[in-house]
Picture 1 (cartoon, one colour):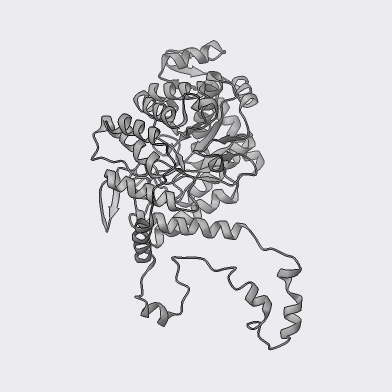
Picture 2 (cartoon, rainbow, N blue to C red):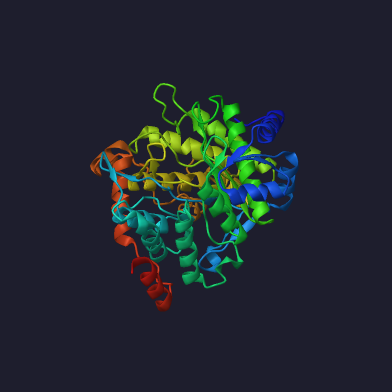
Length: 461
């Protein structure tokens, strides 16, 4: 389900009305002053502006860009025609251990890093588990060390405060040198505070990163019925208005700074007050989010393998697969929480990570489509076997016998064979895959000894 063009325009126009007549509270004086210096009306912390500032911001925002990796072959392009960049789960403090949720540890974080590193589908990882056994004041540095020595994939650190930003920029300088910021390199997520607020920390982090030319993913998670209207259209208006506010602030801080339009809003249950991330409304909202961002020429972050289920069961699989497919079919540019998340953002599961990873691979195969050429049409094979014959002994069959051969968690065997092999369900197969992966895991060894030593001293000393 997608928005009709007239409805998309109405949502956009309504968001512009909100920005002009209601405004956003920007709680950082420097950011508010920057907006005022470019024509916004500022009364205390309330900032109002109209279509002109939005239009100017859209003129300078790039439609595509490349985020540098640790090596050139790990660079990731963001924008039209590029495959979606997929990020692992992010931020939960809880881990599913059997059927028990417990607080995450540094060991859990290292497991998540290993699984993301081994995945053929995940491009960016970052704090899939909050290591609550590490003192909070050391968590950013210790976590950065775990990520950078545990994987060479794109690293997205937590940067919700200036202290966390300092750690992120310091480790980038250690690994990439003093000129690390000469290219977009540091993946970040900066969240608004719905409804219609940008915290002082968020504004400061955004402006400092923008001035360094680093990509800004401004993300909104408004809750329909609590922090935004309950109707999906009204919820989209609030989300869109907040994202346009983040866009304008980014471009005022540094015109041309890469920007990622990010939304993960959904409706709340009016029975419990809980945010419902697996509800069908969420899939429609994410589809509309991709449309709204792309209509402005912006790369978009939306969706994910997100569920309200608490264990990796059928509900988790259905909700996660449909949510992810919705945005992939609309050519979303970046997906956070692409694998491993349960309980509406609140819990990480290694078992679910392996299942989500399997689903991502399957969706990518399905999206490749069907090759139609002389070899694949195989008219000579059909002619040779004729009515009632068999293709089994044909050379064509032997040539293509391995086309669909891939390691899979999914059962493809007859019932009795499946039963004789232990009769494992998908969650049990996923748990076995986790164990196999961790036994096979080898961290990268591409860091120079001096770099490794400096990281050790800075992060762990």
